[in-house]
Image 1: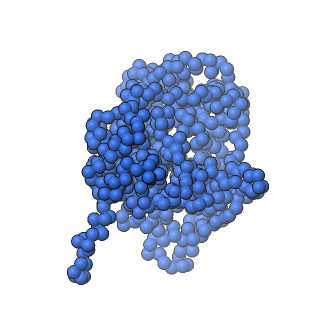
Image 2: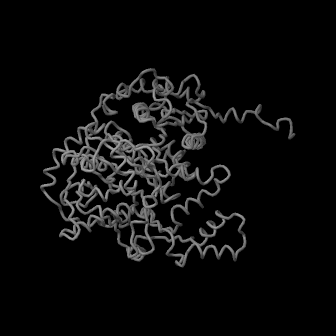
Image 3: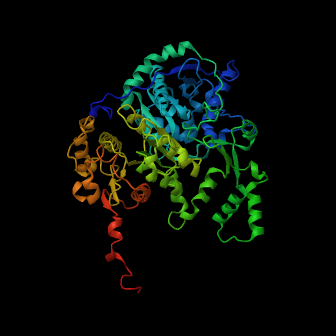
Length: 610
């Protein structure tokens, strides 16, 4: 049963994809040009604008040369037959088992002992790579489709088992568990090339394909047709350009679409600068290197010593060649920053003494979902500033309007930009290395599966729609994801530890056994009554209680001043950090009432300083 089945809503189908496949040549055979093209495609996506520098050659080209490519099946996905390639996956057969990544990862002896312990021989086992998907196609379910196709192809080709290495930073291991894979105990370790922990995953064909068994079965039957059609040429992917259009007056209208910075190496700067898309260049790398030295050695204050250590850090490179150049298409700014780990070490240095570097690294390895980006914008930006999370999924369907400026950080020039886009921009301007995906349609029965795909370590819920509040918690509870919510009134913070309490009632049981399917269509009055039940009407402040029936009548929406939203972001940040680091943070509803905190009776100096 899928998570949507119990909502009474059919699970969304993945879009139709045009997939081509070819069997890689043997070493020395013809077919090498196609294989080289696939390697370049794969490496370019994995490089991810600088997130994984190991996939960039010195000459500026991308390559991921692996002997395992020879004799393996290669699948390339497009939205249409003539479109650019958007995703890739490889399926290795037992004929190439001596070169399997999982064998190399474990070593021959441990690999063979693992198979023997599971009752398999080398001829029974296939290996598929991780799906490699362009950012713009990830939210469309292409990774899920490619993964299902590789598994289905292996089933068709007679596999009894599948094995593979899976990353853990972005929840890829949990993603594979949804296909019936399980992690092999004792195999998790850090792999520098992928900049994350990697674990071995194993799948028994006889046990089915988990939650996506039907999709795997359909693609298993389609594999012979795909294989018979053969390969298609890889089309060049057009470069990312700054989105703009010309208004009737001849001026350029603002970019309201892009939210992801483009990360460049120094070798790519000439072409970027020649494009005319760079409006400002900000290069403070020398000051950043100074801060790097002082972050590592706070006692080092000697100017000569600092300059020597900076030269050692550059290791012969020119300062302009060092680190990453982040280009922000919506503003035209080009900013020079330290490499990712050094950048984050310095950027969060003032957390030291409260959050030490090992814990900061753990936090950067977490994926966080944020639903509702009015109040949620404060939480998301607080997380980005403090370094809570390295990957985010943001969902909101509304645009940024003038009345949002009472609480949502932005400027007049941002009016008309989607709140999800605005939040992603603000976060990436704090840290260009963040991995941010957005759902501009908000959470609906059609998008909710996509939002949770691949797993989350924490969910922040800050929306007004009853269906979303309940459905998101149903998913979180099903997947074991803790939830925090800012109630905005009297400093209310909700914590629901579904990671520890899988049977915990939603919203502390305030709504009884109500299901999301029950609240899809509510009258305005029923909606107000439900929201009041959620917030526990007897405990809210007099002002919101008095105006509870006024939204849509004398009020345009629920009142939410900036001070309450800012406090909510801080409370969510504190709770999130505690949960993600395993510090004490129990389920419950907590009040940090500023009105009570500022009451004269709480003045510690009411009778004068001690």
